[in-house]
Image (cartoon, rainbow, N blue to C red):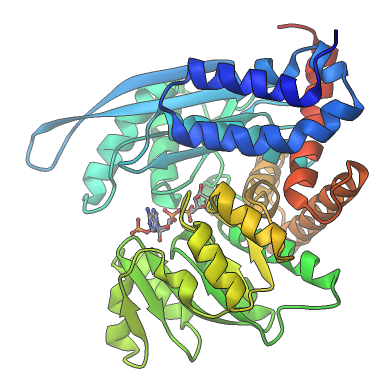
Length: 450
Ligand code: NDP
């Protein structure tokens, strides 16, 4: 008797829960993807015959290591480092490093698993991986950050390389950290392998537009959704959560396209500025002075600072861009957004909406751009950085930006086409997951059981 698609997916999900007890974020990411793959298994049982799902959901390799470092008082501190090398079917492992106290195996596995599909969707030859540490960069001096990065890379350098695994930034890892990490890698290896990390400074192999790519890409993706409805960002009110790398450049591009962004946040609370956020102030506070977002109101007294959890989603808006962190937008927040008339939601962060929140958006006809598709611009430009490093060339900002726009438009089209083909027109969660899955699964079959 052949196993039905639904039965197969349920069976493998039970295995996942048993093998990875207590890893709730990982379970959540797996569930979202598994549920949306049922239509492709129904049409094409070859994937069940090859047991692709059980193979895909088990990382090829997980590295966990001690990261000892000395703080400014001379005290020895210890953190835990991770690298999950999830899938290398279509290219070297690729995915960011996150430094945040919440980092654990579950978080890194959820991010690594999603990265497989996202990277495949970009159309570029990159596999899926993710890493990081439970180190908290907040309040640390530059020297402490440097010593931590050096210790972290002393171990990680044994496992990465331009053709094997290419990390980048994520929460808590920006240009400063990538610089220290690259310096230590170079020292450990005794050679200049520029393509081992992406998001590097422009003077040592970084690509123009990489800093802006995730935020810009998210807005380009939402713009594609709007264009299909003969609509645009022009005159829209937008709310963006977070105030880090992704948020800042989402605010910049949305504003450039004629929208008014009225709110953004950090983990202490959010600011609401009905006149439109002054991005120069946010950039200086966050990128240069590394201060809290509440300081914004000292310079813009007409703005308000509020602290309720999830409260940013109670601000009426046409477009919502969650760009901070996982599970920051729950069912209740989604219902509030819908009742306030939200037209489109684009996920700049990874898994920012809970599964229930996604259902609320889809059930109410909100245009919904899931993270794997909407925030793929960052990793796509990372792959362009790798290409430039290999060729020892540097493209202009305009060249990279144009490629980014094309990539986001292709991801959108690919997601729309697959949603339609597999019987869920307009559901980009299904469309993006199937499009990303199919390429990796076909290659895994072609490469045999390894
Ligand atoms: P940053 O560290 O630059 O910024 C993160 C922002 O989110 C900060 O404002 C931070 O506030 C806020 N934040 C973090 N945790 C929480 C929380 N628990 N509650 C409320 N706010 C929080 O990270 P990025 O901008 O790089 O990343 C943001 C998201 O985008 C992540 O989900 C990341 O995985 C995803 N992403 C990033 C890409 C990239 O290229 N950088 C690529 C694709 C996805 P605070 O400073 O107070 O912690």
